[in-house]
Image (cartoon, helix red, strand yellow):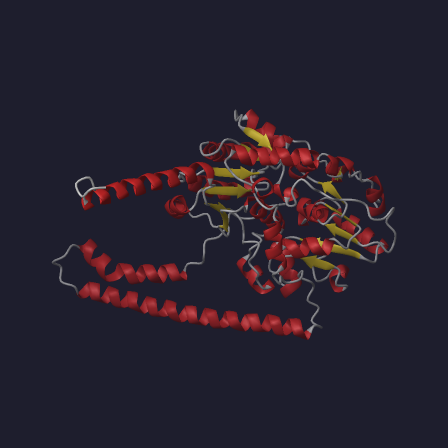
Length: 511
């Protein structure tokens, strides 16, 4: 090339810049169309599956949102949604409308696993969720919400909350392709309101291990030496005869264990705390006066991994708690649900879980008979089809899953197994000095924290009072509003915020 034909240095720079710009455009275009974009999903849950908390801290923070069954389906949802390039973050059950803009900026989707959310006692929580969702611009996907009424599926008792349900579903469907419900009753309930984008997907809990659900009877029949788990709610014990069922099983099977789920159950076991209204139900095995409590035959779990692992060694599980029995099925242990309402009945029908209506049980029901009659073939045989329906729902709502787009949850399980979770909460009989030391140590730490917090609050209050005095002495040249805001506002706000307990959750759920 002659000196005359060689491009000037300015032309060369422009040419390089053009090539670089073209290359950048190509790379960006390739990534957009060929490389899955990193996602951040905000998940409604009490805690991350990887958060290891002491029993004392878990109960103090109520990470189970009053019912440990909540963690079964939220942990399953976390595992299912965690794929390469996707980060799943627990919202710790916080429903703060003021945080909507931050959520819009930091997350790509808000995923809401729910249980029996369409019930009168949950209406305030449903309204808070609706207000938050109404301010979100990102997709909102609901996994397995259910309506709760009686075994007859009569929705009359839900009529007063219909406006709240309608507002919630409308807000969700404005931000998703469809809403996932637990079963046939909830589907019809929403269809009758005029909603058509409703899909029956069951509950994410039973898809924790994907399309495989290995449940089989390990023994031909139950005997007096069989290990049996039983569960039941306070209402089932108090009103539906579960107390008699538990008492007879306790007399016949020495290796019977009751597994509670409520926060009040756990506090009775760990602290012998009888301050909750549930303590009035003395026929509940978690009550200190119950013989099963005294015999150390009661547990409550604050982590699904230890719950499921413990149930692997049992021969059978039965009772009125749907997620107590789903935990057994995930452990490969046969289970029969004693259905007491629509929320358990529709889920059992959808998943074809062995079940009996509690109002039609014989007077002298025996776990051995329930075990004999339990047919697991439809539960396991039709599970792959239900799994495909569930992942199809996720696909239609723009969510990847670890079984189709990841390692099938292998990394999740490996990380989980590397952590040291506390064992199930057991009755405090006062004879275990080591457990006493642990409890007293935690209480001493809490006293220290509360003392420090009290000192900070007192200091901020003193500053606020000093601000009031300065305000009174300030010349009246400035407006009253500006003087008040400048002198008093900041310290008073700090004092109020520090004194305000953390806003948590949406109240109890009932799996």
